[in-house]
Image (cartoon, rainbow, N blue to C red; front, side):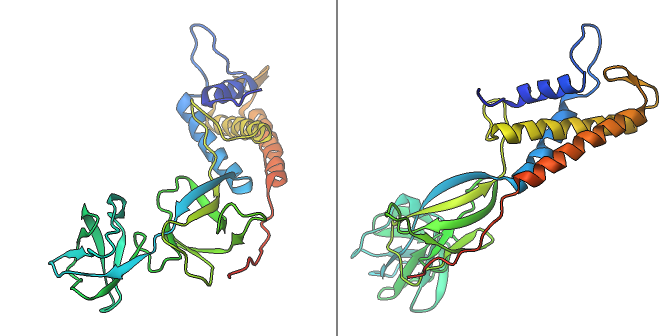
Length: 272
C-alpha cells in the first residue's frame, strides 16, 4: 500500500473525529488547523524516528601560488584550476594569514575577491564557504536537517570507512588526521525532519498511524476546550467527554512515540 499524502492523512483524521463532509454543513475543524497540528506531530515524530538520508558532498582543497598582482583578484596561471562553482568559497592567503571570498569567476586562472589580499608570489588555499581547512564541508544547503550522524570517507570502500564529525553552525568538520584531496567524494549520513505534502511522504506505515493518532487527539482536546454547547462525536457528548477522549488518544500517541525512539550509540571511528 502506498504512503498517504497530506490530504489523505487529513481525510483519515476527519473520519476518526466523525467530521466527514455533509452537504449544507461546515466541517468542525478547519483544514488549516489540522495542517498545523499535523506539522507539530511530524516534528515530534522526527525527533524520535527521523527521516534518514545519505547526502553527497565534495572536498574543497585547492592550493597554489599567485602569479600576478591584480587588485581584489586571485590570479594563478600555473595551476589554472578555478571553476565557476568556486564563487562563494573562501580564499586563505597562507603568506599573510588573511581571508577573502570569491565573488566572480573570470577564467580558469582568474577570480575576483571581495577583499584585496593577494599579491604575486603569495601562496593560497581555497576552502568551502566559511571553512578554514580542507576537512571542512559547508552543509547550509541540507534542508530539514536535524543532525549528521557520521561521514563516510573515503567512499565506496568494502568494508565502509566511517568517520566522526563535528558541526558548528553551517560547517561540518571531518575528524580525520590526513589531508583530503580536492574533489574527493564524502557521504554524510543525515537525520532530517519528516515531510508530508500533497506530492509525497517520508513516513513509514507505523509513523503514519502514529501521526494520525496524535493529530486526532490534539484536535479533540483543542475543540473541547473551545466548546460551550454539546457536540456530536459518535453521539452526544459534553466538552469534558471529548477532552477525555482526546487525552486518551494522545496517551496512545505518546506511548507510540516512546517505541519509535532510536538509541544513538557513540562510536569512535578511526581518524587515519
